[in-house]
Length: 79
Image (cartoon, rainbow, N blue to C red; front, side):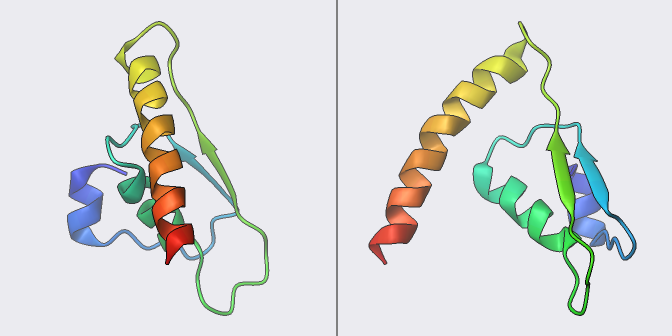
């Protein structure tokens, strides 16, 4: 979700599928965006689809983020 939506506090109350088209540079920002999709009392499953274009800077960003994700998971599991 773009910076504008982060600042405005986008709230999705009925979504069952969410498409993320703008990659975040930080895996933490993307996890936070996915956490905002789920609402208390919600009974339906939510599906998140993240789209990346191949042979662009997004592909390089995805590889970099995979490394960050591994480090993040190691950090979280240590606690």
